Image (cartoon, rainbow, N blue to C red):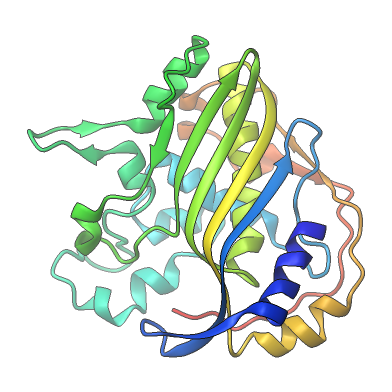
Length: 283
């Protein structure tokens, strides 16, 4: 929470106004923000100065790991985070690659599980790194990336948190995640949960201890219609101690993640929080 609130205060104090053409709104923007989460000590980075709907964040992560390309599949898991981008984004609605309602195109998990090869076929990046890490192998390229410029035109949104690099030091697994763009009041609340949970999950199914998760954000911003709520409400609240995340120990393989895992397999202990804040969402 101290890291999160420090970034929010930095945006208010030092952010520069930049106009965002996609949304037509101005943003207070800073460049280069770095967060670190202690997954090994289970200091779950849930925002406590407002209520956070953590199940939706983890559901979205599971959808990515399964390679989903339909907002309907994400809804079935328990999150509506892709409804707007799949069905209300005007540019995507007019895109010839869109196949119909709820279609997201070749975004996020599709790239992670089915990256197109120039000579045909696909690469399953996630399976490769899990196979390696399960054997104690770190080839310095245990990377899961969703960033494929050659197929940006085939999806509803370029990935924001786009690349995850796993590093195995003896029996401890660490993660470095890279994010090109972050809506701090809304997106970061989800993203930090996902970075933490991704390392915890992959460490568990590959048989390693979880270490630290490093979250690197290039462009951190807050939209003009969010500033007042952040400055006058959220930043005036005192944070609580972090809760803990418990993951069903029966999740032991990628196949488990792909087939039977639901939000009932995750539990948060000791979450204290202030009242919710309804920040505007920009499509």
